[in-house]
Length: 292
Length: 309
View 1: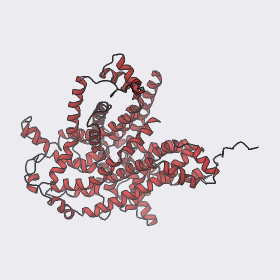
View 2: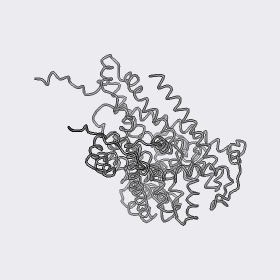
View 3: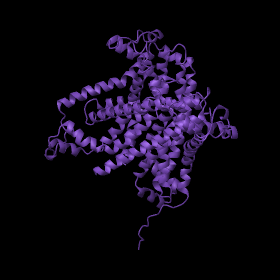
View 4: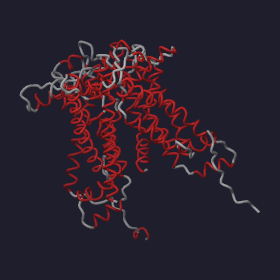
């Protein structure tokens, strides 16, 4: 039987020793506890009646109630913040992905003077502290508003513009990696068939880069959905996003912790579920980047 | 006779630049122009009277910088305090996050039952929106109603009284804990990706030579991950040093002195007093410091890498 001659592939690189297995068990258990405790607190507290969260902490609710999930919508205008966050995050993600695709196409498929300068400049903006351009950007938006009448401050538009540049460098970097891995012969074959650059991009590169585009979209959406600093300065009552709005529960004289936890859970579910479903694309994208 | 197929050359036209225009314009508008404006602002006396039209603010020369680094005056002293706090915070948080991420990645390197589930669990802190996660931590750190005091005092009887976690000196511990919880999954994710590129044969050869698990980690895993670590540590350093979200959500607008990170400090000295000139000078100093550290770091790590090769 030829199969028996084939070298058996070991189940693991090495058979781990007992001490290694035990240390692994203990370490991973402790780390899971550390990781999951806040998640447990969030879920269990969101199901507690108010008197349970106002007294000493208890692990198990005395009674389980869905009240907090009904009350969160009236204590603060959560739905309003939710809609704002969705509009801002979806628009910023869509714009960021489209712009990144165009830029990545140019960087990956053309050799032109200034190519390196462009990538280095765009990537280095990623390292600067947000606080550094928060003040000038705030003033710039005030001045643009005064001189042209385009209200960027306090509008969703200003926030969308800001957020999309946050994910842009990483998006371009990752998509360049993806495009580079697609053989150029395909482009050339398309060119022979008479496809122009735009058709080549749409027909050849985009379909092959779908995993990368998904990864970039997840990243861009999470960045926009979770941002606090610029949201706290650039929004007003009508454009407030969840990041700032959620603190509305905590500034009341009575903090409704069960409602805070319920609201936190509600705003987390879309991103966490999305992330966990699409995580393998993000990991693959990171791997593609790390290889380079 | 057929002509040899000529490889169609990509046209050298304005097209690539055209494709870059949207990205370039936005980067200019949101990052580069504000940065230049910020440097100009740092030389002006930009108080609340000049916010509407900042070009009318009088020049102050190096005055804002002198105010920022005058360590005998309150402004300079508190900036220095904030700077040291941020340094300690960054070293602790990055160090612990890296250690946890590294250990978890190594322990999950080979397959066993429950590995996929653990990987998913470990990524939850990374996926949760910062404010939702940090608000939960601030609930856990509450003096009377929080889980931490309940466990430490009521259940384990480790403390004589219930300590305060969100004010006073303990706030530093609370901040580091939350930051590590939030940061280590990214280290884990990156290192896990890096581990996938180490060829299996290396481990097989090592185990045939009689190397145990710990020796394999030291001799194979860590050296192979050096390029990944070089980038990872730098990114973690920059993110942690500039972290605003964690302290802002944990403590609200006024951070306790023991946890007064530099971003919060600049934010407060700008938006509470509306003195943007001094705030900008502090931001520029922060940028110079980050550039210096990043440059030195890249120089040292690259030299060590080429010396090893």
